[in-house]
Amino acid sequence: MKNLASVSVIKDILAASGFKFSKSLGQNFLIDENVLSKIVECSAIDKNSGVIEIGPGFGTLTQRLCMAAGKVVAIEIDKTAIPILEDNLSDFDNLKIINEDVLKCDLHKIIAAEFDGMDVKIAANLPYYITTPIIMHILESALPVCSLTVMIQKEVAMRIAAKEGTKDYGALSVAVNFYSEPEVVAHVPPSAFIPQPKVSSTVIRLKLRDKPPVVVADEKGFFKVVRAAFGQRRKTLLNALSNSPAIPLDKQGISKVLADCAIDEKRRGETLTLQNFADISNRIF
Ligand code: SAM
Image 1 (cartoon, rainbow, N blue to C red):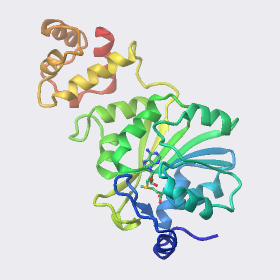
Image 2 (image 1 turned 120 degrees about the vertical axis):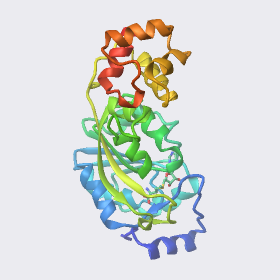
Image 3 (image 1 turned 90 degrees about the vertical axis):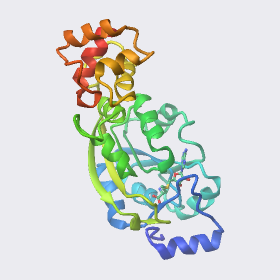
Image 4 (image 1 turned 135 degrees about the vertical axis):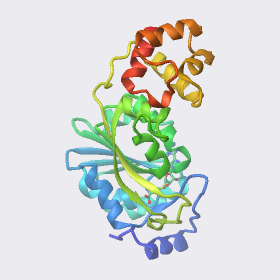
């Protein structure tokens, strides 16, 4: 079997197949053995694991996942990559390749059909143009999944892992922390990919929570408060919430809610913990 984590092997495949990397599909393929091992190791994949890989490309990560897992389902949008992927991974009988957009697949159905009784994990070197939509789609879908280990743009990883009171903390940090516990695994330079991306990358592991870390009466209302608070970052909490059409209270009403929560109305959204957001939204919605 070919080791796909190699520039010369990838170049041979390109020459033989006429495949052209698509910038618009975020095709930056991994060629660094250590990074590939790290993704597989920190996903804690074993023979009882069913793994969904998003965007297998030529199958460099897929190869490792198939060796470690009981079964792998790889979902790739680019139909021109499919014959190459099938050829590269023809040795594995525990792999299913699906040619679809991951955002349009019925992941619940795939998990029920393919991974009966297995621990389900998701692993990917994600296409950077839709990193956040893919992560949020998976987290909000309430899939029976233990973890999501993904390579993403470093800047996005820093926003996800940011703590309150820091400049990177925002609606994305709150949303991802509501559904999961993020852990930064490793930073990865552009030289680990072909072609090289313009940005640095980070492997991040999201351990999905059984239930959110705060009690929220109305989840949609909770996220309305979060979006309103960060929508106008430089404004005080009182102004940001009362300027938002999504919050059904006037300035006086919001002032009372904040006082009841013992939160200074001059604070900014970026200083609030998940518990603060829950306290506020539970008094409004
Ligand atoms: N896993 C391969 C690797 O590490 O070498 C390729 C990773 S590359 C960063 C991202 C892959 O995701 C590409 O193969 C691209 O075609 C695929 N992709 C892009 N958008 C997608 C989508 N919406 N659904 C499924 N795959 C997608």
